Amino acid sequence: MAKVFEIKIDRVELNEFFFKPRPKDLAVATLVELNYNINVANKVGPENSIIIQILRIDVTTKSNPTDILASIGVSIGYLTKKFSEAVIYQNGIYTVDSQLELRLRNISIGTIRGMLISKLQGTYLHAGVLPIVPDTIIE
Image (tube, rainbow, N blue to C red; front, side, top):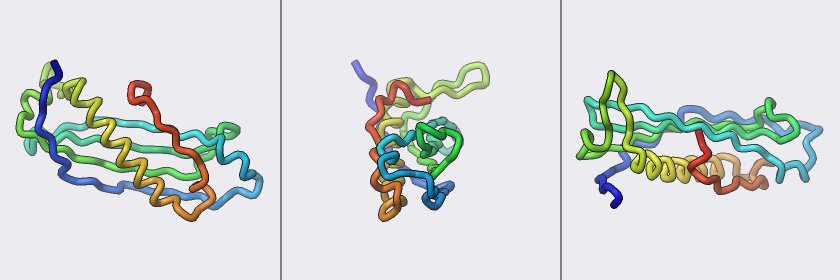
């Protein structure tokens, strides 16, 4: 049976946003071949009973994966009443419950997707297709 945690989004912060003007050699057809490199990291603030997910998406092309066309970085803070059940402290390391972390990751990725789409609206990258990614393959 799945554990139940009362979670509340405390804050969403845009840490960074970068946008590169369209390179002259980037064809419109290339836009469907964009890479969206997604990274998620967790931080824990036991003094505030907060779990923070730090996310970053880098947008590149498959033909040139080192040339970042756009990137966005976001931090999302989650509060929980049952912090000691949601986060385990062992050997000096805080670890978020795996089921909870997966749920928070889904919420966080959905949030950053919406923020990225909003930021790219009206640009050459708005036509790109940001795929729905299985959360189990995101680092």
